[in-house]
Length: 129
Image 1: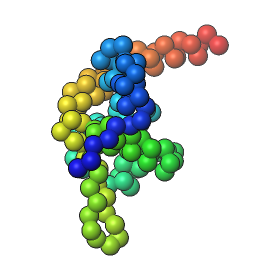
Image 2: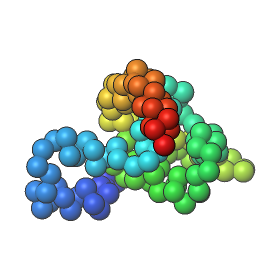
Image 3: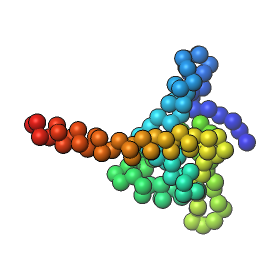
């Protein structure tokens, strides 16, 4: 198994550009779809590309592929190719990726608990205009 890091993270580590560990965590999970991908892989098990694609209406193939590749390069997601025709590829959380699941669950929980607050604020703003 070859070990590699996403270039951005590798350079920041080599240059001592992370001022704290929180920055590393955010660099790994930052991206419009990464947290949701991690959540679904952690709670629904391995998923095929098409199954992940259906989770995000309007996403482009290019963006989803980029997010999955970055998660794979960072060691969070594994990709398994099955030798069948047509080709079958499944994505799953790695052991390292699984350690992010409690964090992602807390992000989900916070959003669930505070969605009503933001909806109410939006309604107040709409009334003012």
